[in-house]
Image (cartoon, rainbow, N blue to C red):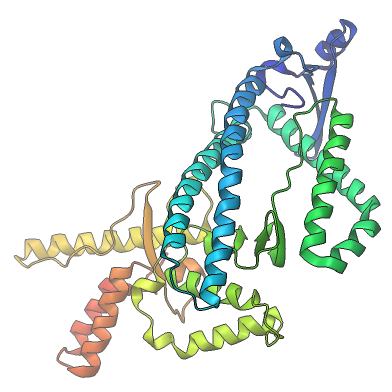
Length: 418
């Protein structure tokens, strides 16, 4: 909204841009690299005049008003929820009875918070889609100049803010480490105002703002833009639910067991007691050792993962797996036709191929023949049948070697690959 980035306000030629400047229009220059080439385009700034705004800024401004309305209703309810969490936690710590009313109120408030939060997040995703689709080459709304303008403007402003914060670093650091959470919250609230004043002066518009929502302490950064910690919103509260961003355990497709192990590592690393002197590396080691000891007790259902097959996406492990399943399906189908011709009952199809865009289940198994994930992926039903086969071999040994080999080949012949 700040730079009036909209398809109807993008200028692609320098001649047109110069002509508009001469007529008194103010332009925002967009400069980014594409295929090692410098791309120069422009957008016509709106100067905070409604009639000058492009289609995207007009729609996004209306959506932002709706989202802010939801967030204003959400804020006091989140505060109430946090207060109730502390009251319940303190009452239970003191061994007091009669927390049912508090828990009932907490449940009611939590439900409303969840509903309002889902609505405002849906609006956020919808708003992001406008410029996200501008960078999607398969979309009818694709416009490289617009996508580049959004990305370059974001990078520029983040660098400006980083430089501003660094210039104030010494003053903030001392207070941050001196009083931890309380001082951090106060310092960050003050810094937010300074940053937004700076952005308003730089951009000449009130639309671009830096939000401050919580301080995380304790906090762990696991990678670029991946972190988790205990959030403190209005006041220090170490009983809050963990705030998790982009860490693998929250991603769709992960197995239940992977999530449980990851959650245990997180919980252990967030303990504030004096006995918790282990490094994060030591915590991970301890949790994994415990996991290995219990691995024989794991149910197949707990290690089932999911993925989506998209034929046009270069997901190597999924594409490799689907290729193997197509080969197996072809062989099993041919075998079924031969058996039917002989008057025999065909084996059930275990290698059905998912439709493009369909989510399917799989288990990663051990493989001596390959280290590629795509070669270790198997359908859960195939793994269960192989496990049953192994049990039959050990306990009853009723099948001859030819029959066992035939079933193994039909179920999981890993060596028969292109």
